[in-house]
Amino acid sequence: MEINLEIYKGKTEIILQTAEQIIRDFGRFGIGITFSGNARMAYQELFHQLDQNITHLIENDFGRLYALLYQIDLSESSILAKKREFPHHTDSEIMTELIIHRELKKVLTRYYFRKQKDQHNSGPL
Image (cartoon, rainbow, N blue to C red; front, side):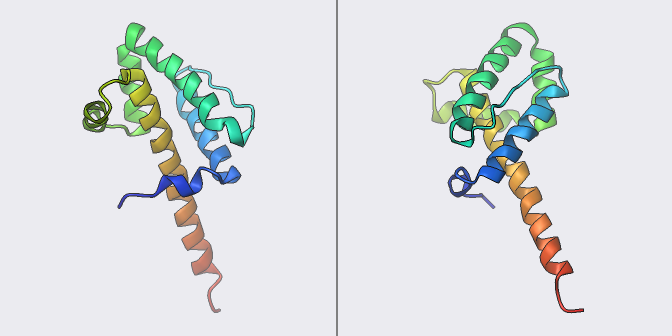
């Protein structure tokens, strides 16, 4: 099932949780990502930092990049498919875009199941 991510990009709570997820996952690998909290600028702010860090990892520490992508659950096949779709973008730009979308999907999945649980728990007694 493909999630329409566009409808969630304007929801501040989802944006903040996505930024927190990115910060948490990159932090596990000693990579500091900061976020101002400005939901309107979140994509640009995070994209810029992630792109720089991914570029650094590609050039200097591919093993750590591979472990990070595994932690985030981003497959090599999805990266290659996106590269074929957007051949004029750099590898780091493609990975950055996929990382942001994957982290957003994680947040939305938790949000969905939390909502389902809440609805189930608030049913008739």
